[in-house]
Length: 149
Ligand SMILES: [Zn+2]
Image (tube, rainbow, N blue to C red; front, side):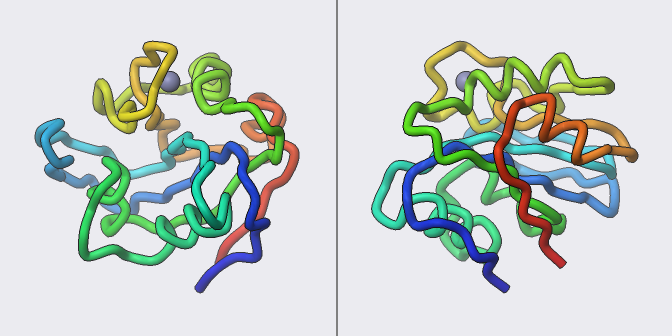
């Protein structure tokens, strides 16, 4: 299943539902416990294929994990993608905004920070078992939300 997304650069938030408490090794970052519930992973895509290619990589399961998120991805379901086509890298700004959203937590220090330039605590945030996606999209100022399954 691949959502219809633009093949141009942008900033995104992947909304992951983790159905069970999960212990996972996140590459060289280490092994962490991830409680069941809602997660958002923030990134930007500037390579060939833009957002469409990056989101396709994350929605499909990869056999060669590269990003930290690739290690958590198989344990959950991607329920939605928030994004904007603003030309600037906004991922760190979106992390900073999302950190002030109710119930935001950092489950694994440094998760997803491979390209971080703002010293974010992590680019993966946990929101507990209830998440109002529309409120989160408004909070980070995403322009578009695409729901999956
Ligand atoms: Zn950052």
